[in-house]
Length: 114
Image 1 (cartoon, rainbow, N blue to C red):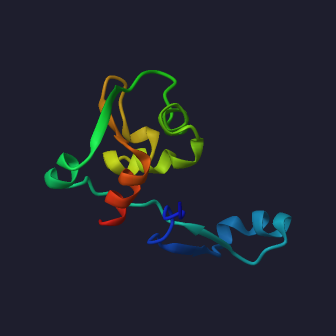
Image 2: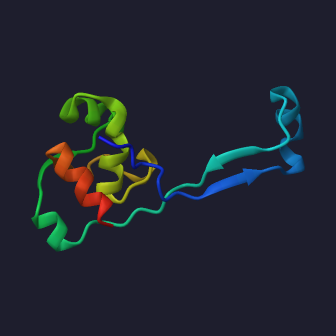
């Protein structure tokens, strides 16, 4: 499957004086990195078109662990995050319910529609 995770993300260039020592240590003039994505929830119609497994967020949970459990690889952690509109684990509280979209190929196709 194609990796679509970073396809539409902004690429930022950080060349501020604040990081001058870091640039020097790394032998760089600037650092390019992806901006934090802004995720949208799938629409009601999109959610109705796909199966999902509910999960109550608990202490120690991580997107990559859930990806490994449900998809057999940690590489699709971003899919669970995007499906739930939560770009990082810090956007989820213990006790929150999230959904794991299944099957993997249909979930990727669904999120590519957005």
